[in-house]
Image (cartoon, rainbow, N blue to C red; front, side, top):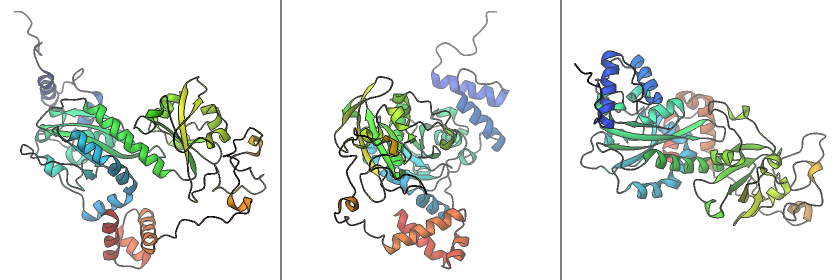
Length: 418
């Protein structure tokens, strides 16, 4: 009797996934060559947590206080989401897809949902505070990314629970200035497979949100934008680096690392343990030259690898001054650097006029007004946020520490999240 192949040549991709799933859960046969390693590893983890994949999944939100804390703690990530939301909604408007944003542990802090007639899971799963972690809902794209920090796509039967098999989802990580996972962006479709490369789209917008977050979190950094074409400087594919007071690359995004030919190492490695090359050596231009790059428009620089890129620079400083290291006080006994330089040895006649511009105090001019003092409520929120971080999010402990009621803390959290 001739051998009958276990997977007929006419089987669709969906059929192969279903077959591989059945063989794995019923017979213990590894789904090699059909299921990605990321999904397979997630199945294995979920088996240790959830014995029966046939169990019905309930998309339950975390407690109200934890939801409010997540919205407060990740307000910069939410602002990055809001900055891209209108465009993302327009891109997805005519598709069957919705977008979701979670914080690092998988709690939903932003979502779009059109409420299409065929959707049953989506309206429930896109509520603020819903826990999309592996521990809560098994294998899903946002849950896997929250666990691994790597982009992934999960189709239909690749979800651990049968109940979620109607979903198709693609997710990508968003990292913060320290290289830690800051959140996860997901695009999901219920009942209808993707008709486009969802992984590419979600990766593009996750990168755009990450860029916004990196710039927002920069303090006392000279932020450089560069790309091979000036027209790309305001797009998600721009290279970004932050230069610190010591003239080092404090951070860079993935595009910058590729353009500079710098290996970032595994994402699991803390950013402080990664290489922090000198900015002038990495970028092929003196600190004075980098500091004098235009804040608008673009100017060309040639990287050490010979690549010509167009760049602009902006100073992210608390005092709003343009000078490169204006916000840093020299250490005791150290020589005071000339304006626009990080080291007295770098001060020479080649320093650009803009970088060498004197501060108002040095020039005898009146110092411009400082930014207005924070409103009392903003200070109030800063105090609450610091106390929450110190107390591990325990609202009761924070209330005792600040000698206020828990109700006041919750009101402030709701006001910040609104």
